[in-house]
Picture 1 (tube, one colour):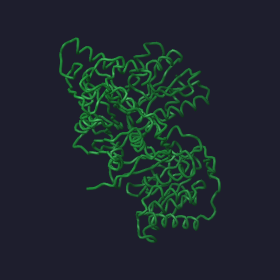
Picture 2: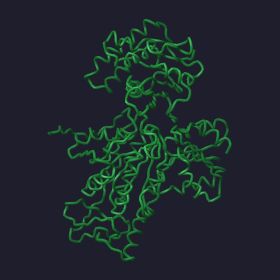
Picture 3: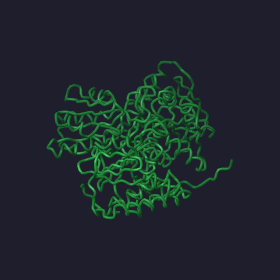
Picture 4: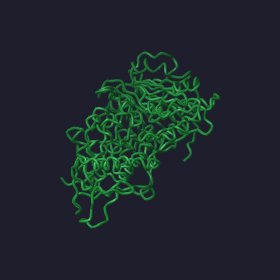
Length: 387
Length: 194
């Protein structure tokens, strides 16, 4: 069936009244995503729905609805190896199925973006209600020691920005990147600005420049990120989930295994400050700081402003990068404040990290809610005033 | 683009049953206010897993300043299209907040101070399309709420609906506006609680 190919690359800036999920699609297309494979699941369905409409209109866009989420991520890995910027979107139950392939992408250093719109869990849980229960799963869900980048967004404009950042980071570091949203962020409509393609930073993977016969697929380098050719471009490389040597062939020799693993970790660790994205509000003279992410950061923002009016010197540290954990930023406030408050819609998955960093220096208060409702500003304000 | 009215934080809830077009209405209303009038608008929604019949609601927070918390806390205006929604959400209305109901569906209101228009009956009898009730409601809002400007809403309809349905929706919008004008000729030019 011939599809009408339209030029979809609008260059001028424009505004849109859009859902968080729509903003994710806009961000992905802006970043140059041309492949989506997924299986629709509430509350991420709109991403697949709009991708199904938009991608076939691109000259080289491909959308596939797969039989399940395991296959979805498999297809995304394949497309990325073939040179496409690729992504998938899912929610809790689908994210559980994807775990195996996240490890595979991590080991084979395939850049890709997974959007997980968190809903109430475990299992089928609360399909139409928000939660933040997948935070530690995003970090540790797949087996084996592995580095990973996990981002989050709290409003619609951020959904667009962080999707572009997710693609940029995945391409830069050849790593899977997980963007954690929640039902509220994904299903809020707000006005967003779609930036100009020409002036927005878009990063694409570095391809090898040497002649194909000199190419060593996983060669050690200062950056730790080997150049990545697309399959079929004349460069030969072997892809395996087994630990491999610099040529990509399975090995179990300890010195080669260690080199590979160390490089996988190093490539993320040494660029920590490029990956750490945080946002501070009223933090300069704060005595109590709220550390929040996702939709709860919006409640915290209002609570902090209200607390200031009532005379409490409060501040907000919004985490946009969840992993690698923004330790330096958090540590700074732990030293500065008499207490930090971590409100989240789970039983304390991020506060666990904060407590680990805190190491007894300050007091860490938690505020947890797991009934499928957002934490209100009033609840945070109450804890703020007591802290 | 500077909005014509200064709004601190106006909280509006559209509530009823799945299938009444509440989410579409929220989208059109929000798009009109945000894109045409230049307000900051955060529209959130809540619905059950059912496609039709379950409780459905769409919340809008409208402000001249950027919005932090996107959910309403105390409603300035509650629109109820079912008895159940009216009963359930009336308590979220702030002191002096307004209630607008479809009085062909909501038979019993918890207060005597309310606006009532039979949106569903109007849509069924005058347009022959019960699905158009949400746009009749939008027309009424354009008359009753001072910062909901008819011109902006029509523009919002044009941007968010496919041209195929535009004409019938504009007709429904016009009907809602005239009916509201007929029943409530004197409305405030600046929003104040009663």
